[in-house]
Image (cartoon, rainbow, N blue to C red; front, side, top):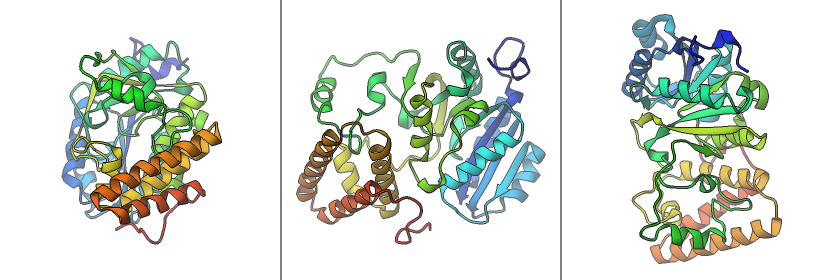
Length: 340
């Protein structure tokens, strides 16, 4: 049970008991200021901003606007998002606030988002220990829509999210009349950092994110630990977060994941995302090596077919080589794909 001092009289965590932790970089000042203004309106008690190579005077400007309500940690340059989030988690825990809310620097909560998360957390904590519970806001890019809770985590032994057993169900899912209303709340297998709300005891239970993921996938591995240990991640649809900048992973404009991967124009993003996913799946989501190998062969066969059709064989080879590095256990920064 959560100690009484971490709750308001109604049993719902008080906004003043919440510290928001986020990481910023580059020239993203206007988006960050918009997020901070909204957080002040939401009544959060403290904000930690990790300056991970921003190209503007973060500490000077934020101190002038927000005073000591915002704590700034300078990394001295961009050290990779995974390292930045580790520092954000550590600093947030050190503030002493019992509840932590993780956001990206472009995640602007809709009015009432925090109150919805707090209310949902109080309800869910009646059935799940706080040390193994997280609730997460709904982000438009990553909304579950009518996808069932079972589909939110790929099957065991999938490769890059592909599993031969999903082919029939995916076809059936797209047929007319198959759409279902979204439930009030959805239990997730994994989630993104952006919008996640939890008690600090969660970090005591499962540890900090991993720095060696460097870029992308650190949130997948971290949140997988929650469900792997028997905990729960609950998406709260009435808690809405607006993404001020679209995700590079958004693929609504392409027919499928294979075409999306082949048409990506960023070597840096593609390399770290597919390498780290291959590492994660092979280390943590593989039970039957033969089935994993089959799905891997089928994935590359389908990717090869699309690559030939699109004239993107160079991209196919690049993706395959990147994934092979992940399968071999290579993580951390790669000198071939440095941060800009």
